[in-house]
Length: 581
Image 1 (tube, one colour):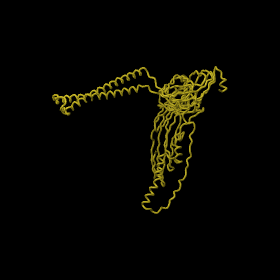
Image 2 (cartoon, one colour):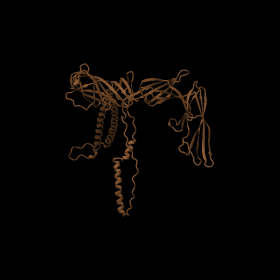
Image 3 (tube, helix red, strand yellow):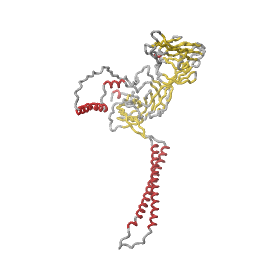
């Protein structure tokens, strides 16, 4: 016994970590103590969850096994941990997991239905036995009639025997035998049909009985070996990881656009969609939600080098003198053997060449890495109230928090593709916690306008959300001019010139910051020259790192109209043809 354990006061021992070690053999006289536990706390990850159970045990002095009988079937191996506080010195040996099959309890109604089906099966089996007896009786009658019909063929009784009776009327007897044999054969056929029908009904009833039978379920049993110096009480906490649980974020973004002196406001509510199908219900538990990906990679994959080299030189040998036909045939046969052997080796799984193995490693799918330390991309949310979540995979939604922002409003339009302007709100996230990717339900001035997507964002990052079409900004897109011509006297060139007019009108009672997005062709050949023609210089070229995509940003005053003329001029050699893709 360690000295620190002997020195523990009897009132309250310090917390003891019961770590899963290698299984320790226990004395034959060890007592098994059943530990009743209740799920008290659950931490759910984007994939998986940690479940925490609590229970009390009265432990007599000596070596014992504390048995935890009600663990779910999908406990991840080697994740079972036990902690506790005890009123005396307690030593922990090992934690072992065993898989057992249990039979579910059935209701009274199900038991009554099963009993009725079993009674019906017994009645049908008795009926089947009676049908078998009736068939044997009819078969005996048929056999008797068959023997009776063979009597005339036996001939007269030999001389010196008993006196002979008068000769019977065999014609009448044959008629009687034929009639009775037909009745017996028909009866046998009908009885056999009844046997088949009864056997089918018995099989149907047995299938019904099988469907009503209590379904077995697989559970894991935990066994913890302990040694107590004296009788004590222990409060134990059991923790384990499961894989059949998950949560994903859901967001509500409610935008108030404001009017007059009232500034715009944005409220972002974060919810969690939680589900689990572990086989045990979480009833009245303290629920926490963690952003840690506990079932992903913990380290980056290793990559192998790829060698680039010239192929080895091919040596050409002198052609041998023609061999006789028999020798040539034998030589071709011998040359084909290594190739056939190579094919057999490949089919049997011969090692790949280094280059192929390296290529296969490089093509491995990338898995997002899990984090194990606190960072801007990790947070744990504790749900304020205790909650219950069933074990049937049905989604449970819980609220996490709500944040208010003062957004910057702006509009954006891509008139070449859509003659609508769309309202955007830009806001900066708080720096405390990250935001996981999830679906956003969008509301503008109390009206639902659709759904969007929030990407994974870290705290303090700026983001914008679209809030639907802005009908108070009118947009028109028209083709102003299209010209294709040739220029030059000595070196002829072809010219393709196109101009478009974008008409804008702000019907709001306040100024609106508007961004117009358009594009011009991008040349992939130095002989093709493309020149932008625009009445207003673009605010940004190559928007979002896309070549040829342009953006114009300006303020439209109330009731202001503005025309934006934009186009391009493409020039290329006259003897060639261009295409737009």
